[in-house]
Length: 449
Image (cartoon, rainbow, N blue to C red):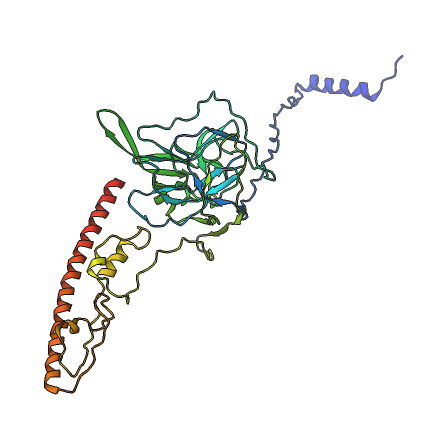
């Protein structure tokens, strides 16, 4: 017989107690399953490197002889550096065009210094350089002159180009960082490799006054368009452009938006945020524009670029030599030379010529003698302010007080008459100069419009 153990008695006792007492035993419900969402996996965010303004690099600065007609495009393997800042000289003569102030290819990206130049032929127009980001390389067409009626044609997409070979010892730079299409170099002080999308025909100098950028996001768009329609053609003139950049693109972390004149010389003259001053070329002789297959030309040595932000001292800047000033103590020109043309428009400005004409005449000294002098000898007395007069001195004679007094009065009257006549002539010459200056200013204003 199987022995009765506590394990057997306990269930029997519980069942008997339940039957005899008429109560039930409560059993706890099974535990519910609770779904706990797992914690998200940590996402690694790559920190954005702090912007460090590029150190000044040596730059080769040259004058370029622009070609006539549109040259063939070339393909460069890396982007041009950020723009540089130039000092725009005053307009030297009517009809001059601001040429240069951009990066040009000469076995490396070198700086084509800005200058005023006359068109090679009447009615020739200046075409700004062309930069395009195509498949990570730069399609480049240098600035050139265009005959009347000739329109710029961008390189077709199906055109096959071969990368140009850089000069010996040139280090390869960064590929263009930004969207594909037409662009201009980034503003001064920007991160190397960045480009700014822009419409075709935008002068690179429009970004001179823009804030430096460290990321992609700055762009240029046309702002004002004036349409002149004739019987033959329709001409669209872009008067200014708008530069827009979000806060994530600029070096100071602030959004940027500014309207800039589309004229290259006006845009280059605006104050810059970062002064990366372009060095002045050491040689005034222009270098021919680069052409595929042409042997390399000898370039001048590189020069260091001065860099300073707004509010910092920029040090001595290289500025063009000022026009020669006309001294205020110079002798008044004679009637034969005061109204005649000047030898060169660059030698003396219009304001300086007017100042030379309107300078007050020096008083004619009175020669004191003791004897009556003939009429012709009085007009030949020395006068430093009037070179047209003679330089012979009159020999004094025996003392005759009464006659000498009369002679002094006569010479004083002659001097007063000469001064009056000279004042009338100077006043007439001044009016002619003022009228000529007004006509030139009005003509220049009409040409700009």
